[in-house]
Image (cartoon, rainbow, N blue to C red):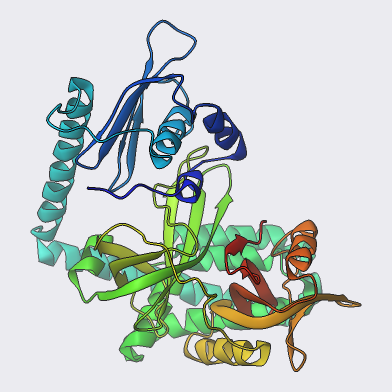
Length: 438
């Protein structure tokens, strides 16, 4: 039987604060009827403003949600309210009663969708390998042509002088569009970043981009792991099914932190994990449509035993989640072990030596105190210090972090890079993780 989720786990699924507040009003038993919980599926009827109650259901393993309400947010307030009700122990498991017809119909449809997806994947696997090789060769040639053109444009920019940077912003947008046409979206993204790069960092930006374009020109000569890094940076992607078909790493993965970012097209969730046995860091990405929280939600501090498949590269970090072995469990009572600021910068240095285009590396800082100095916030253990990366979190979040610390050492998880440390999670004396909000 599925273990009940914690309240924190449920709240982490909310797409926004408004949904969170509305769900709280539906977390009591009064508006609910016909609730049940069986074989990993939770359901209930919630009285709304109309004569017909809303039908809400959750498939807990994925998780997946269903509600008959017209809300475009996902999961909606009714699903969140039902989960909160269940989390509090109010919903009892049903035995021998069976699922209502509308729940059974939904689950049958989901199973059919899973089977169709597997069939499509099998069809792709069995597709003509010669045709697939020809497509790959055509794309490789187009990317190589685009990379060669980019190197010429970068050289022209240096000859023209970097002081002309502002006047050439429109030109760089055209170059980025050309990289999209060349099927090199990674190069396009980095070209667009040049138009927002401060003058002081412009030459370094040119150099890294020129290095990447040049590396692709001789990618077949590079060591396999570095070649995989170059292809990924240029914009080649790996299929999830192919990754999971290869080697995986089974471990008890502790969730060190998560952060959502959103724009008009997509909500992106970044989840950082660390293996208890292997000590390996891992980064999971999950995506949701605007107004919808990504389905993958793992509360910070909890531990999940699962297999991860890592994307290939010189410094593998990004991974996809494979088979899970049970539900997330409560993590250790103590904060995770970490580094001093000097050791954290050294860890980033080791990582960037393997992947020159790496902007940051996930690390845990132990026993540091946040202090505000003339040049901004720093994290120090009294012997070494690392600056907080400007703009990584709002100023008020840093003041809250200072309040959590109250002058005492804390443990911090975040990303350490050449621009400083971006804090994500803090552990104070009580040992509970606290998100350093954006």
